[in-house]
Image: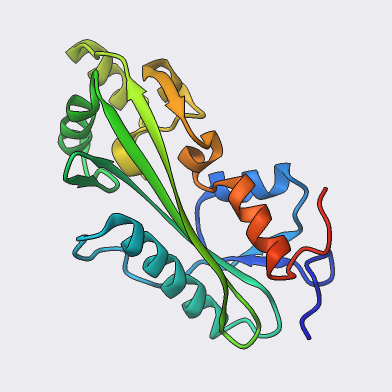
Length: 199
């Protein structure tokens, strides 16, 4: 039987995202970071399934090096219509993404996977949040890209940062847009026994 998450047996986060580790820290969940070596590229036919599968692969990779701990993998995509937006590779890419999102609804999908010490999936889920952007001028887009904040973020923006100026409304989990749907995650951690109680 696995020990529940505590200071001695912290959750292992298979992600380099500082936003995810900040969310866990803010909720008081003991954890440490071990970055996965999984390639995040791939064909996306079903965004929800893609996110869940990539989250599993990240957790599995880290789990092969970390024995006896609960492992959390996660992946986030931004979807507008049938187009999937990952992380921009350069300023032109960021400009195209932000222009596409301007004045429209888009969906932010985060898949997460919790593995136990045997490498077995203890819990897996994907959560979707709808975000609406105000219409953006070319000057606003250029100015935002100049802050360098769009880089390293799916969809080329950070809702918890300067990028908040673009967001008119959010329907669903706000923390999901940041990188982890905390309500669903805590429910999952409780359900599989990783957390004994919360808060």
